Length: 188
Image (cartoon, rainbow, N blue to C red):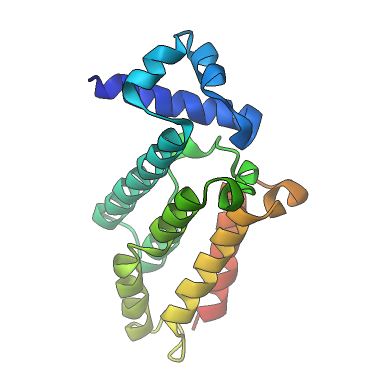
């Protein structure tokens, strides 16, 4: 089974999702790719399985990007924290996250997985925030577990409501605004 073909299907599904939202069909994906629906079913059993794999595909890429930020030389602590909090792969900036509003109702397992992925992997960021507190960059009384909850809640809200659509703002722009607001609040 070709991993390249599986990735092409995931990428194509993202493109079709931007147009049709969660109502996209396997026929839509096949038509977009110029292949038969039968070919897609060789790799994925259902649309839900494709959506499930997209969650891993996107978040695995985010985690790789975060590791690159952690390994990047020449960044100040503040720059590193800001980049980690707003880490989002360039190739996913075109994803229309405003169309995810119905995910919780239509695909509860995928919604649960998405939330779990959003809430995990915070350890390196929390360590850097604590280092920033020790170095006087962030307030002594800053509680980073509360900071994390606020960040998680903001991001979850973007996925669960039509806030982005109503605000006419992209996910990346909204994420950067949340990071700016929260970091300003803990600045020493």
